Image (cartoon, rainbow, N blue to C red):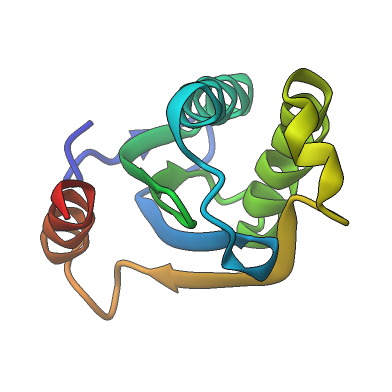
Length: 132
């Protein structure tokens, strides 16, 4: 989805972009192979259910970069909470080796809006992270 696309709803027009980063507990490199693929599916599913548009997603072995267009009715903390909660439950249920971790995700999450840094800059950064 283009970063310049404004969403027109009945009573509002908005263009809200968040850059969200979160990591597995103790920065363990567990987001690889089938876990990586399943996590991507879960993130896409949660975003679709809430009518958020994923602008860019980079899942590295030990962190997730998510650049997402949301709506004014959703707090950025809810985006991460819903994604981390669903993915923790489902991934730990599907991949037994993740049950050895006390929890899948750290409590820490980084949030940024695209207002301070251009959306194009954030998207290019995420794309570069995907190739390293």
